[in-house]
Length: 90
Image (cartoon, rainbow, N blue to C red; front, top):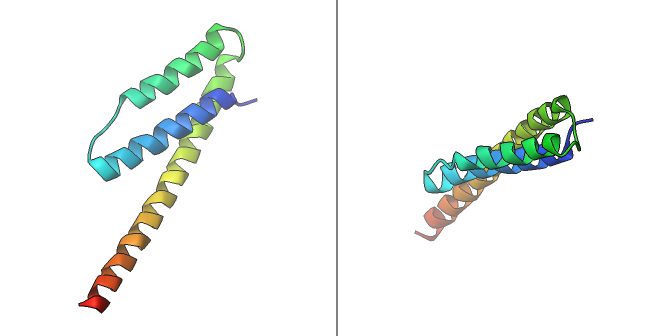
């Protein structure tokens, strides 16, 4: 029932938005517009109903946020390991 197009594109947009913000300090709002256009196109061509796209959007944002949190955790662990290694070598 949820649109896989909306789910995939909103998950990618959410993850990329947060990753780029974390790594570069930039906010790429156009990612949300891109995902919304893809979702709208699915309704426009008759592939999905609007509720399918809304459900896919919600699911994609949740997946993107979860992946973003996992990314933050891994980055934090790597930075801690580098800091520990640097203090050992000093």
